[in-house]
Image (cartoon, rainbow, N blue to C red; front, top):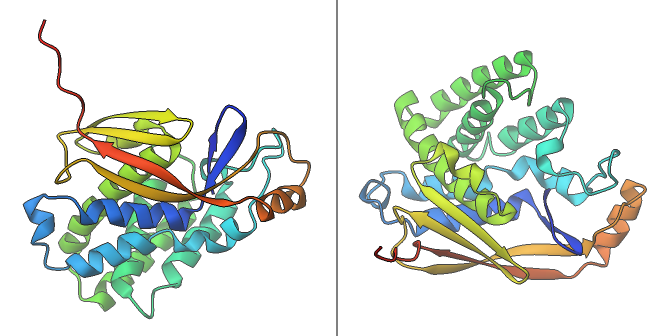
Length: 244
């Protein structure tokens, strides 16, 4: 679950909805390499499904025991994260090995970040071996997987910046970005601008009261009664600079 702290509440977005937003953003990118990508349909489908391992976790979100707030995906402990990432890979391994291989490569990239501590070294080795098996069964070459991973990395970063209001997710891209969060929308300014023009997306979200939740059950009850809303995300170039 992606948890954003607002003035009076928590805004919660599932990983599956974040992934769908990532695919929608990537679909509108005008880079010629992407427009003419030989696996464009497969790539967009894989981006939309790359976080499907979070389905069960997001259906029954947990409370951060230290704060009582909903547990954000960045705070999930390594054993649970390994379960989630393994599920995300295996969920599509038989149906769509390209999707599964890309999900494994994405997870491995995150796991291998210096000092991240997201997973154990043993799991990273397991993930690398499974990625290689899936690459072979999908018919991809390692270089083609790397090419597709670059696009997934970009789309994932754009969507996470929009969902969280945190521009630091753009650090692994070649874009400069600024995120402005208002009470009713998020604006993501990007340069160089990757889309055809200013675009509005809608991100599914729920809001609950900002307070400590004693147990996972209390959090679940609050979410049961929370109304689904469409959170507007506006993606635009930065405003023109004013001459000195």
